[in-house]
Image (tube, rainbow, N blue to C red):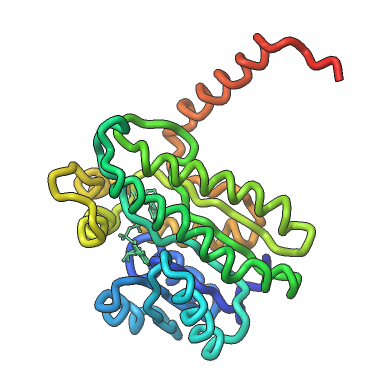
Length: 262
Ligand SMILES: NC(=O)c1ccc[n+]([C@@H]2O[C@H](COP(=O)([O-])OP(=O)(O)OC[C@H]3O[C@@H](n4cnc5c(N)ncnc54)[C@H](O)[C@@H]3O)[C@@H](O)[C@H]2O)c1
C-alpha cells in the first residue's frame, strides 16, 4: 500500500511500546492515527505526543468494544485503511506442563482471540473497499519454539498462521497483510502484563526486554513493509540460524517421506 499519507490507521495496544512506535511512524508518514488501548491513563499521556492522533479505550477481548471503538475512530478519521492488531501481554515463564489454565486462557484471549476480534471488526470492510493493509504483531516466538513460553508460543504461531491465511484471502481484493515477528524490544511489556494478570512470581520479559532493541526502529520497519507489501517483518537478524535449522528439520522430514504417487 503506497498511499499511506491521508489514510486512516487503527492500532490496538497503541498506548505503549511497539504499537506506539508504529503509531508515531504512521503519523510521520501522514496517516490519521487512532491509538486504541485498555490503559486509559497511558492513552491520555501519549496521544497528545503523536501528531493528529485520536485515542480510544479498547479491550481487545471485548467484541462489542471493538464496534464502539471502530465507530468512534471512523467518526473522526473516516473509513479505516490500515489495521494493526498489536495489543498483547508477555509470557508466563514456566514449563507448559505446569501452566495454570487461567494463565493459558489469558494469553490466548488477548494475544490470539484479540487479533481475531480485530480482523473480524475490520477485514470485510477493507475487502469491500478494495484497499488497505492489516498488520498483526506476532513475535519470533511465532516462528521458533522456546522453553517456558508455551502459551505465548501457541498464540504467536497462530497469529503467523492467520496472517498467512489472510494474505491468500485478501491480496486478490487489494488488501495487503504483514506479520511482525520481533525479538526482544525495549517496551513496558513486563509491567503491562503484570497489570493485566500475569503473576509477579514469574520471571517476566521485563528484565529481558530492557536489553532489547529500541522500539522506535520497529515503527519504521512496519511502515516500510506496508509500502513494500511484505508479509514477514523481521527485526532481529541473529535468529536466522535458528529459523534455518527449524526449516531444515522440516525439509529433512520430507526426505524421509515416500514421494506422493498422486
Ligand atoms: N517487547 C518485546 O520484546 C516483544 C517481542 C515480540 C513481540 N512482542 C509483541 O508486541 C506487542 C506489543 O507489546 P509491547 O512489547 O509493545 O508491550 P507494551 O506493554 O509496551 O505494549 C502493549 C500494549 O498493549 C496493551 N494491551 C494489553 N492488553 C490489552 C487488551 N486486552 N486490550 C487492549 N490493549 C491491551 C497494553 O496496555 C499496552 O499499552 C505484543 O503483542 C507483544 O507480544 C513484544
